[in-house]
Structures are given as structure tokens and as C-alpha cells.
Image (cartoon, rainbow, N blue to C red):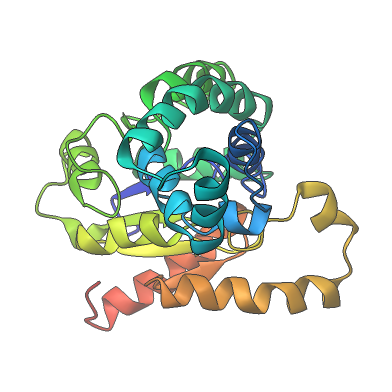
Length: 268
């Protein structure tokens, strides 16, 4: 029997969309529509934040801010960010649905969690509008979490713990933070778990920290994978991950490590 009683998953880059590719293309196209060039690398930096905060963070980057000033004739403002969000949401919804296949091995992991009577909930930096068709598609494939908390479902989203607290309430685990694990591929998502007093597991290969597509991952040699994962693992550790795995397919090993920590008297 496991001491862990609940797990809260992120979505893009953690249980769907290997490489967390959907948001990147949408952000690049969004700014390109306004004559602003941003790179995939720049678009990845604020990943995990609610999408309005993500757009604000991009607009605050010196290189992007300078382009905005040149093209638009003024500083990038919160009003600009809000307008871009309105434009971004339908673009992101379409992109997210296109990239909504489960991470290989996730459904097996989910089945194992159910066998262990471990409650499953989720949080996401996506809005409810974006998530609605993804939730329906996931349900058709057999994944029905007890709760899905979107970034606009709570007064403060990541890295605030409010979404985690809502999930723990649904799972009946209020006050049992040390028996809950947050699994995420981004710093804000891991911080969300730490701020809620929970254990955290970072996924290095499938998410934003590496940013490879499934095809790139499969085609790479073992040496290429290990070399590329060094920085991804370090990024997740620096963000507060108690354990780091390649993907949710490896979650059992992370649970075993956390169980050993609990047995040794350690708390998150």
C-alpha cells in the first residue's frame, strides 16, 4: 500500500502534448500577426503561467518590448496584453486540440493509480474555454479526473496554491498535503505544488524543459537524450522538484522514491 493518496497532474507537456508544442506555435503566430518576431525559446520562458501572465511576461522581455515600441509606437501595456489574450484564446484552443494526444504510457499510469485507489485531479495554465474540448476528448479515451482546475477557475492561478487546494478538497485530502504529489513540466506548476505543501515531480523529457517532439525523442540516440536532459533536469530541480523523471510513464519510480523519503521521516 502506498502512503500517497492523491496526485495532481498538469496537462500540456505532462499528460498530453509531448514537448508542450501547442502553446509555442500559438504564441509565435500571435505576435507575428502584429509584426513582432519571437522565437520558440522566448515563448517557452514563461511557460506554466496563466496565459495572460504569459503574454505580459513576453511583452516585458527587452527584445520583444523594443520591437513592440518600434512597430506600435508605444510601450507594451496591460491593455495590449488583454487584447492579445482575446486574440490568442481561439488560436490556442485549436492548437491545443491538435496536440492533445496522451503522453505515451500515461493511460497505463492512470490505470495503476486507480488500482492503488490514489485520487487523481488536474490543474492547468489553460483557460476553461481552451480546456473544454480537451476534457471531453480525454474522457472519451478513458481519463476522467476528479477535478480539472483551469487558470481562470481561481482568483489566483500558478504559482499560487489555490488550484491545488481546490483539487485536494475534491479528493478529500485537505490537511493531508504531505500525501499529495504534483506532477508538472514547468517551474510555475512545480511552485504551485510546493506552495501547497505537496511533494513535486518534474517531467523532463516530455515537457517544456526539453521541448522535443515525440518524433525527435524516438529518433535520438541514448547519448543524445542524456546530453539534452542534463539542463532540463537541472531546470526542474532548481524549480523545486523533489523528484525528476522522463515522463509520466515513469511515475511509479518517483512514487517509490517519495515513499522512501516519507518512511525516513521526511516531509515535502
